Amino acid sequence: MKKYLLLFCFIFLSINYVVSFQKPNNNCKYLTDLRKKAKELYFKGEQSASRKVCIISLSFIESIEDNSECIVKLHSKILGRLFYIEKNALNYSKALFFLDLNKKLQKKFPFYFPSYNYSIKLQEASILSRLDEKEKSNTILFKMLENKEKFKHIALGEIFIYNHTIDNYFNLFSEENKTWILDSIINHSKKAYDIFYEKRNELKQDKYKDAISTFYTRLGRVEKHKENYEKATVFLKLAKENNTDKESIFIDLHLSSCYFYLNKPDSTIHYAKSFLQKNKDLKASGRLLYAYNILSKQYYKLQEKDSAYKYAKLTLSEVNKNHFYKNKGIKKMFNNNIDKIKLNNQNILKSQKKSFISILLLLIIIIIFSTFLFSYKYYKSVQKEKKYLKLVKELRDKSNKKKQKAIKIKDESIERIIESLNYFEKSEEYLNSNFTLYNVAKRINTNTTYLSKIINQKKNTNFKEYVNKLRMEYVITEIAEGEKFQKYSIEAIAKEVGFSNASTFSKAFKKYTGISPSYYIKKVVSDKESK
Image (cartoon, rainbow, N blue to C red; front, side):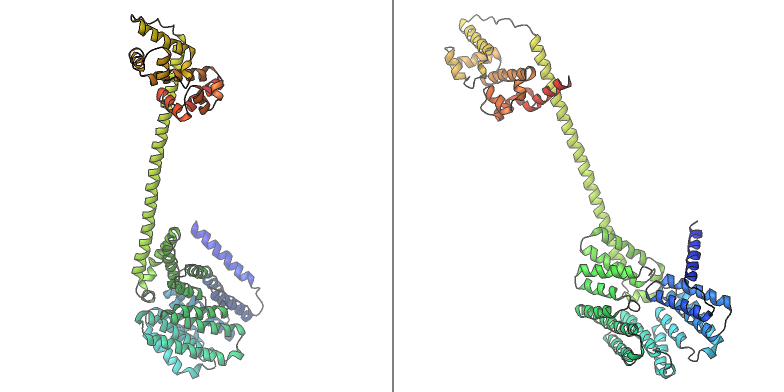
């Protein structure tokens, strides 16, 4: 299903491209327009779109069977464009296929190509360089420079030879890292620029600006290789100022690299992403790997792990593609550091996984702790509820009990003291803050020691606990049966029942009942409202 969908899309796009050029009566004019469109798309970085236009052009040439000079020459140029498209995509077998077709075409019509072998030789030198045959490539180019007089009638023919030679020198420097190579690059770049300068009046403004941009780009790259990154950025920015978005589409990548080593993360990320945005169609290239690798390293330095992880995965995806291991030139372009790049980005992925595991463990600990805390609070809540219900039950039982029989005590003195205490209980004098052991003993004409001893024996507690118990039972009853205490603050209740402050009262209440007074009041009110 996917294959049929892709085929349909290709046919639809092909028809669109053909329809976009209204076919004139003149085949040459129609084919010229197609070639211009392919060239325009190529220099915009839209390689796939350019390839489609070229294939449409070849289909058109085959259909018309026209061997006129215009058609044959355009045919050769279109084959040349397809050669460079496939070479840039690292499809070297396809590139060689189109090169071979072009050779056969020029041999078949030699009278149309007085400078036979010029474009063919350039393409041969270019592909040999990519196939790591730089010595053979340079031999072809140097011979062409020796015989440059033959190509004088070709517009800017000598410059194209210089351009290929300079590219070879850059690739050679990646392998050998020798200063003389950079000097040769500068020397050849100046010669190429001088030719442009001499012919500036004959050229279109855009063409001359592109020449300036290319010259500054090369100077910037040389300074970058010398590790003069500040100076490199100056040249590269001059290149951007003169760039017409046709020739120098990789300036942003060089700028990103310089800013990475200058430790300027914002600029590094900006230019790397700008390069990727402008080169969306760059499906297979060492430059794509370079951009992803810079971004993964920069984000990792910034501790932005999600972004570092994203670009590390993209970097490894590029590294793992077969063409990187098959192509020695690309490995040398990275100074044979492909394996190191792979290892560094694998480490970034591992650190992200470790971070994920740490977060996961932390979440598990939080969940366990939260569950424990919830369970503990629930348990405490249940215990409070049980104590409250027990208190309510005791209160009901107390109200239903008959009055206890009077204690039979033979000793008149003990009986008198007990009767006095019973009186104090009935009269609720224990609610007075002055209801102390000393004052009570004084009122019933006894001493504190004797009074304390009787309370211990008869009440099974000490005086303080005895008084607190009376006060607590009073408060519990008042809250349960009346509305006054339900509306009081804890401070007011404390004062009402003889405590000096709310804190002492709350502690005594909780000790006696197991729950706080505020909780008890809340539950009593809630129960009444529910009824």
